[in-house]
Amino acid sequence: MGDIRQAMAEVEEQPALLRELWDTRAAWSGGMAGLVRERRPSRLLFVGNGSPYYAGITLRFAAERLLGVNAESIPAAVFHNHAGFDASGRLDPCEIMLVCPAETGHSKGQVDAARRARELGVATVCTTLNPQGVLARECDVVLPKPGAPERSIAATKNQTMALFLVLTSMVEAARELGRIGADEYGRLMAALEAVPDNVAATIEASRSWFEANEDRLMAAPQFFLIGYGSNYGTVQEGALKFYETHERPTYAFELEETLHGPFRALHPDDLCVFLSAEAGHERDRMARLARAIEPYCRNRVVVQSGLQERADDALVIQSGDVEFVNTLEYLIPLQVIAVLMAERLGIDLTQPKVAALDDIMEPAYSD
Image (tube, rainbow, N blue to C red):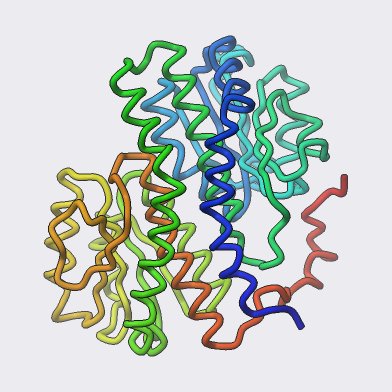
């Protein structure tokens, strides 16, 4: 048996790892930025499974806004078996970039995508714990993650590091391309610099909130996680963490999509979590929806920063509410809730439940 507290220990490692990345950014952020400057891609594909796929969904709008590319995130097996780099046939391979936000860098889907890219002359970037591993050897730029592999089955620190590495690189690329000016560059970099401290404070705030709300969390039969914009990817990753850990049914929805069928499955004792991130029309609509569903669901939690007017039932985190950057900060409470619920249930997250299926599916290469 493993240590049922290991997953929380890895959540708690995140501030130090993110601070290390910030302090060493001069050594790694120029690689992807230089490749973007050289190639000037018009199409960018994120390819991955599970958390890496959701990282792509989270980052795609930042890629479009900062780099001016047509960005898309595709599950690795879907890409390998059904998709291509350019269905139109009109793009030169030099105009396309592949990004694989990997964890260990062993996933066959990502390695196969990178190999296809190399054959075609498509530039490839990856994040990985193994900078000399099988995926890294196929990539033009490797963004290495510090720290040891996660013992917990539910990845936490690897997701935040992947988001931080790629987003910081895209901000640098946007500055070099002249797509953002000095003021916007300074605003985004200041928000990124604040992430390690914000994550540390948010871990503690989320733990305190969990302890105060443990009874209703543990009693909830199912969970609805709701986000908008780039944080649609955040709630998808959060849902993965929930059913990987405490094993309760969990559903992730984009704000507008909640009204197109999902709430027919909502019951009074379920728990709805609303991520109230950057300001704008969507945040205003989310606040109205969170209040309006009270007759249908008693448990409604608004995750928000201290910069906002406090909702009636709020989990207050530390965030600058800066679009794209806030995806790292708003993921943390979902991680904390997930692993603390698993601890209370006595679920050992270091032990795989379906490891025998790997022999059937053969999802990974070795280095």
